[in-house]
Length: 199
Image 1 (cartoon, rainbow, N blue to C red):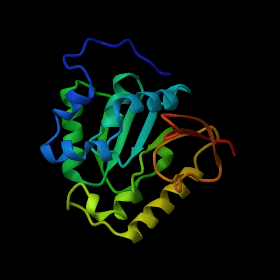
Image 2 (image 1 turned 90 degrees about the vertical axis):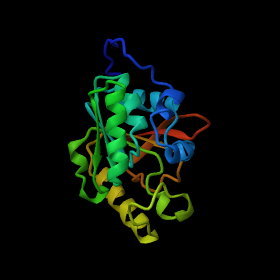
Image 3 (image 1 turned 60 degrees about the horizontal axis):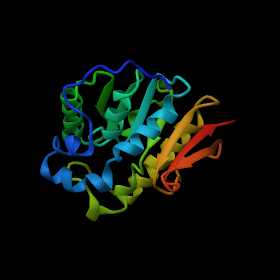
Image 4 (image 1 turned 60 degrees about the vertical axis):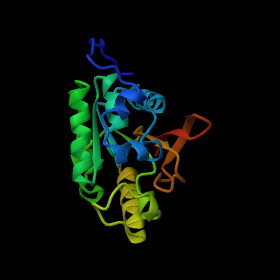
């Protein structure tokens, strides 16, 4: 893992301290949408143990995975979030925790070139398009057709990555994982999986 000497931070990063930074409606949604810190620690260790420098979290929300990974690594964690308000909150939280190697970008996944990144993280990022009742807010359109479009684009982009590229998925049906990737290990009762592109 690409570790760093940990400086003394003003704020400890815990489930409670992170939740305290969220507006009330996101506190309620946190358990459904945001990666638990212990899971994020393991996922980021898997992604950085081969010295990947730029990690991309697809559908980052408020950046909980990115912030956790960046806190324990010298790699830079980038999150893609299509809601501007939530991307803004994520960058504010990163600043609160004094973490500089994390960036939450407001963008649509269709506009992202995966070749700019070394490793990837997915926590069921597009499923919200199939479960309208569980949406975070009304800021962006949600449609079943978008689910398929985002899924196919992600699969195509990941398939173009170089041999040895690492991908971690948490929950989900893993439809976005191309056949060129092989699962090499899992944790948290099989919910967290590490995939490596072997061809």
